[in-house]
Figure 1 (tube, rainbow, N blue to C red):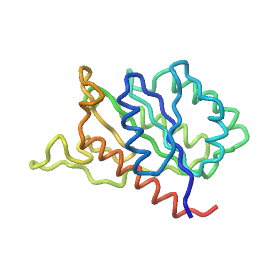
Figure 2: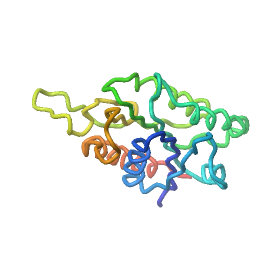
Figure 3: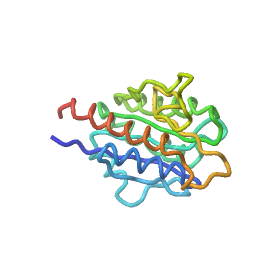
Length: 185
Protein backbone atom coordinates (compact mmCIF):
# COMPACT_ATOMS: atom_id res chain seq x y z
CA UNK A 1 0.00 0.00 0.00
CA UNK A 2 1.42 3.35 -1.03
CA UNK A 3 1.85 5.93 1.70
CA UNK A 4 1.21 9.63 1.23
CA UNK A 5 4.40 11.60 1.80
CA UNK A 6 4.65 15.40 1.86
CA UNK A 7 7.87 17.41 1.69
CA UNK A 8 7.21 20.74 3.42
CA UNK A 9 10.05 23.21 2.98
CA UNK A 10 11.17 26.81 2.81
CA UNK A 11 13.71 27.94 0.24
CA UNK A 12 15.20 31.40 0.22
CA UNK A 13 17.28 31.26 -2.96
CA UNK A 14 16.10 28.08 -4.70
CA UNK A 15 18.78 25.63 -3.55
CA UNK A 16 16.61 24.07 -0.85
CA UNK A 17 13.72 23.89 -3.32
CA UNK A 18 15.91 21.89 -5.70
CA UNK A 19 16.91 19.62 -2.85
CA UNK A 20 13.22 19.24 -1.88
CA UNK A 21 12.44 18.22 -5.45
CA UNK A 22 15.11 15.51 -5.27
CA UNK A 23 13.79 14.21 -1.94
CA UNK A 24 10.25 14.22 -3.36
CA UNK A 25 11.39 12.36 -6.46
CA UNK A 26 12.90 9.58 -4.37
CA UNK A 27 9.95 9.42 -1.99
CA UNK A 28 7.19 9.75 -4.57
CA UNK A 29 6.09 12.71 -2.47
CA UNK A 30 4.20 15.92 -3.06
CA UNK A 31 5.83 19.29 -2.40
CA UNK A 32 4.44 21.93 -0.08
CA UNK A 33 6.31 25.23 0.01
CA UNK A 34 6.32 27.64 2.93
CA UNK A 35 6.13 31.07 1.28
CA UNK A 36 8.33 34.13 1.81
CA UNK A 37 5.99 35.28 4.59
CA UNK A 38 6.16 31.95 6.46
CA UNK A 39 2.73 30.73 5.44
CA UNK A 40 1.46 27.56 3.80
CA UNK A 41 -0.74 27.80 0.72
CA UNK A 42 -4.47 27.24 1.02
CA UNK A 43 -5.13 23.60 1.86
CA UNK A 44 -1.57 23.09 3.14
CA UNK A 45 -2.52 22.15 6.69
CA UNK A 46 -5.06 19.66 5.35
CA UNK A 47 -2.40 18.16 3.08
CA UNK A 48 -0.11 17.65 6.08
CA UNK A 49 -2.98 16.17 8.12
CA UNK A 50 -3.61 13.59 5.40
CA UNK A 51 0.07 12.64 5.07
CA UNK A 52 1.52 9.41 6.45
CA UNK A 53 5.00 10.97 6.43
CA UNK A 54 6.24 14.55 6.54
CA UNK A 55 9.75 15.52 5.46
CA UNK A 56 10.82 18.93 6.74
CA UNK A 57 13.30 20.99 4.72
CA UNK A 58 14.94 24.32 5.42
CA UNK A 59 18.17 26.07 4.58
CA UNK A 60 20.57 26.75 7.42
CA UNK A 61 20.74 30.47 8.12
CA UNK A 62 22.92 31.60 11.02
CA UNK A 63 22.98 28.08 12.49
CA UNK A 64 19.25 27.27 12.36
CA UNK A 65 16.10 27.43 10.29
CA UNK A 66 15.10 30.77 8.76
CA UNK A 67 12.30 32.77 10.36
CA UNK A 68 9.84 31.74 7.65
CA UNK A 69 10.18 28.07 8.56
CA UNK A 70 10.09 28.93 12.27
CA UNK A 71 6.80 30.78 11.73
CA UNK A 72 5.37 27.65 10.08
CA UNK A 73 6.69 25.49 12.94
CA UNK A 74 5.21 27.82 15.56
CA UNK A 75 1.88 27.75 13.74
CA UNK A 76 1.93 23.95 14.00
CA UNK A 77 1.31 24.29 17.75
CA UNK A 78 -2.42 23.97 17.06
CA UNK A 79 -1.71 20.60 15.41
CA UNK A 80 0.61 19.71 18.33
CA UNK A 81 -2.06 20.49 20.94
CA UNK A 82 -4.29 17.79 19.42
CA UNK A 83 -1.35 15.47 18.58
CA UNK A 84 -2.57 15.26 14.99
CA UNK A 85 0.87 14.24 13.64
CA UNK A 86 1.49 11.62 16.33
CA UNK A 87 3.12 8.47 14.93
CA UNK A 88 3.58 9.93 11.45
CA UNK A 89 6.99 9.31 9.91
CA UNK A 90 9.23 12.41 9.96
CA UNK A 91 12.57 13.30 8.41
CA UNK A 92 14.52 16.42 7.55
CA UNK A 93 17.10 17.98 5.28
CA UNK A 94 19.05 21.20 4.96
CA UNK A 95 21.48 23.11 2.77
CA UNK A 96 23.97 25.87 3.48
CA UNK A 97 26.84 27.63 1.76
CA UNK A 98 29.61 26.31 4.01
CA UNK A 99 30.67 22.68 4.21
CA UNK A 100 29.68 22.59 7.88
CA UNK A 101 27.77 25.82 8.36
CA UNK A 102 26.23 24.38 11.54
CA UNK A 103 23.79 22.37 9.44
CA UNK A 104 23.46 19.85 12.25
CA UNK A 105 21.81 22.57 14.38
CA UNK A 106 19.12 22.87 11.72
CA UNK A 107 18.59 19.11 11.61
CA UNK A 108 18.37 19.09 15.41
CA UNK A 109 15.72 21.80 15.20
CA UNK A 110 13.72 19.73 12.67
CA UNK A 111 14.18 16.60 14.80
CA UNK A 112 12.99 18.44 17.92
CA UNK A 113 9.96 19.73 16.02
CA UNK A 114 9.11 16.16 15.02
CA UNK A 115 9.54 14.89 18.57
CA UNK A 116 7.32 17.65 19.95
CA UNK A 117 4.70 16.27 17.57
CA UNK A 118 5.37 12.67 18.73
CA UNK A 119 6.51 11.64 15.25
CA UNK A 120 8.89 8.82 14.27
CA UNK A 121 12.21 10.16 12.89
CA UNK A 122 14.06 8.59 9.96
CA UNK A 123 17.76 9.28 9.33
CA UNK A 124 19.65 8.85 6.08
CA UNK A 125 20.69 5.23 6.53
CA UNK A 126 23.73 6.06 4.36
CA UNK A 127 27.38 5.52 5.00
CA UNK A 128 29.54 8.61 4.48
CA UNK A 129 31.95 9.04 1.60
CA UNK A 130 34.98 9.56 3.80
CA UNK A 131 37.85 7.64 2.25
CA UNK A 132 40.88 9.17 0.54
CA UNK A 133 39.34 8.11 -2.77
CA UNK A 134 36.11 10.02 -2.07
CA UNK A 135 35.28 13.02 -4.21
CA UNK A 136 33.08 16.02 -3.41
CA UNK A 137 30.46 14.68 -5.81
CA UNK A 138 30.00 11.33 -4.02
CA UNK A 139 26.78 10.40 -2.26
CA UNK A 140 26.68 11.59 1.36
CA UNK A 141 30.02 13.35 1.07
CA UNK A 142 28.81 15.87 3.66
CA UNK A 143 28.49 12.77 5.90
CA UNK A 144 25.19 13.19 7.68
CA UNK A 145 23.30 10.43 9.43
CA UNK A 146 20.39 12.31 11.02
CA UNK A 147 19.08 13.88 7.81
CA UNK A 148 20.22 14.85 4.33
CA UNK A 149 22.66 17.72 3.96
CA UNK A 150 23.90 19.63 0.93
CA UNK A 151 26.44 22.38 0.45
CA UNK A 152 25.91 25.11 -2.14
CA UNK A 153 28.54 27.86 -2.28
CA UNK A 154 27.08 31.30 -1.67
CA UNK A 155 27.84 32.40 -5.23
CA UNK A 156 26.59 29.17 -6.89
CA UNK A 157 23.36 29.17 -8.86
CA UNK A 158 20.70 26.53 -8.35
CA UNK A 159 21.90 24.88 -11.57
CA UNK A 160 25.38 24.52 -10.07
CA UNK A 161 24.27 22.28 -7.22
CA UNK A 162 26.33 19.12 -7.19
CA UNK A 163 24.73 15.97 -8.60
CA UNK A 164 26.13 14.01 -5.62
CA UNK A 165 24.22 16.19 -3.12
CA UNK A 166 21.04 15.90 -5.18
CA UNK A 167 21.48 12.13 -5.45
CA UNK A 168 21.96 12.00 -1.68
CA UNK A 169 18.62 13.82 -1.33
CA UNK A 170 16.91 11.46 -3.79
CA UNK A 171 18.22 8.36 -1.99
CA UNK A 172 17.13 9.91 1.31
CA UNK A 173 13.64 10.25 -0.14
CA UNK A 174 13.73 6.58 -1.15
CA UNK A 175 14.62 5.65 2.43
CA UNK A 176 11.73 7.70 3.84
CA UNK A 177 9.40 5.93 1.39
CA UNK A 178 10.74 2.48 2.32
CA UNK A 179 10.47 3.13 6.05
CA UNK A 180 6.98 4.58 5.65
CA UNK A 181 5.89 1.44 3.78
CA UNK A 182 6.89 -0.67 6.80
CA UNK A 183 4.32 1.05 9.00
CA UNK A 184 0.66 0.17 8.59
CA UNK A 185 -2.23 2.44 9.43
